Length: 341
Image 1 (cartoon, rainbow, N blue to C red):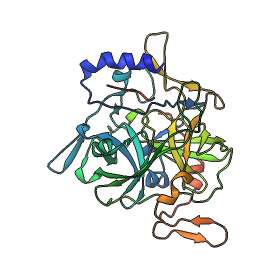
Image 2: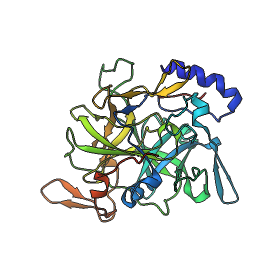
Image 3: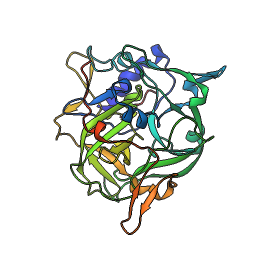
Image 4: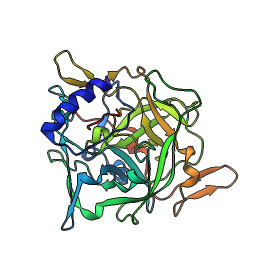
């Protein structure tokens, strides 16, 4: 399926003149009900979390002039030849990965999103690429102060368990990068990470990021399927290429439990000759893989107000004071890596 989508997009590239984008190789998909929620549909608690999530862009896709940053995007439906009625069909796409602010100048993402010093130098981290009100267009022009560069890679890992791969040839295991920005972030709070080991099978989780490079989406209604894997866990999150690097939260504690890194196929070819999003039963498909936060939490500095409960090995984070009850009741209101080269 990835080859089919790649061929279609290559043919369209000449007409659309899209700046080069390269999503992660691994696909993601929809399980059961499509739980993706717009920024404006969320309550204030979730919006506060979302405000510390970034979209990653190639430098050529961000034009800065006179204190403003203009994001270069194309129409989602046109680019992928989506069938009529596909969700978010008329929205813009352009970001290639997602990430989260975990320190004053530290962003956490997937290792395959920032591969080396060159890709670091060519990446821009953008806050606020979302849809803020019902009926409004996505924010694609923002203050230049919302755009940050990648100064250096603090820590990165992209590997798999020895000799292991899934049927599509994807290597399995942790996949992460911790990068330092070109300056400290203003107007956004670092997010708390879970330094304990209390997540388990069937726990409720939430992901925030930029599927297929779309404006920010929030997706709950998901659970941990398998927490026994080495370096990662499997869940039924509704995610796509572009979600790579997205923070995955425990909806009970509101702490980051991991980084979305890979999953099942994103899209399938419809008999009508157009493209549709891949969907599975809630318990079907291969599931989506999330790098466990324990793989890099030791490299994330403790935040002001973060406490350690002596003798228990558990942390209580006070950086963002929230009541998790609002997240528990999230509902959608009606309303792969894919290469664009």
